[in-house]
Length: 112
Image (cartoon, rainbow, N blue to C red):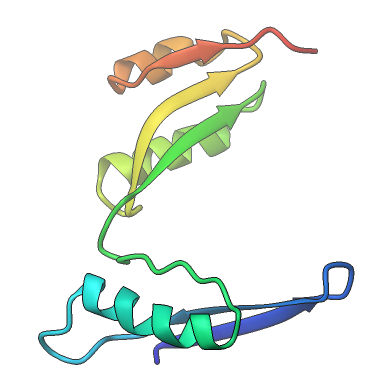
């Protein structure tokens, strides 16, 4: 186990746990899912398991302040963020050229 965090939600009376671990050599993701499914079924639990090496698809939303967008795009471009930015959405056209220059789709949603 590399990392573990948990919390409960009193409103729904549910317990949540997020855990990061390295599996034994040779155990695949499907085998882990099947093994956890048996335990989850016995205890009426639900679970999700994800490969940390698979890049998460991300949509970035930006308003008038572009410093965070520029930082995210830079870190994504150099490979420092393990994500796959699939689009940028904004309620302003201010950063459309910046986004298009990164070969990403830009979607304008004029909301105030």
